[in-house]
Image (cartoon, rainbow, N blue to C red):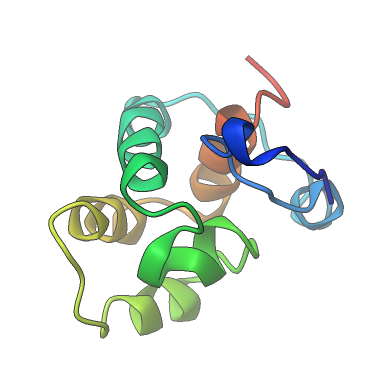
Length: 105
């Protein structure tokens, strides 16, 4: 897991090994691109991903994980992320998080 200084916390501290466990997807779709701005807003509001921590920090990106996080009381920053993730495939979610980490362009 990549360790970042607190001032660099605008990116996800995601395990690169988890991403490779999903086959290191590198899909670029409109949804993957849209996720970049939503993830930035999420991390500006919640340094550790807020109620979506298990998705965006721990890389639990299966449908059941997204559905479970959707049961939480989410704020105006978290709700758009979960709504978008619900409409994405697992590969798109993995790609979005990896792109946010700058693991590919």
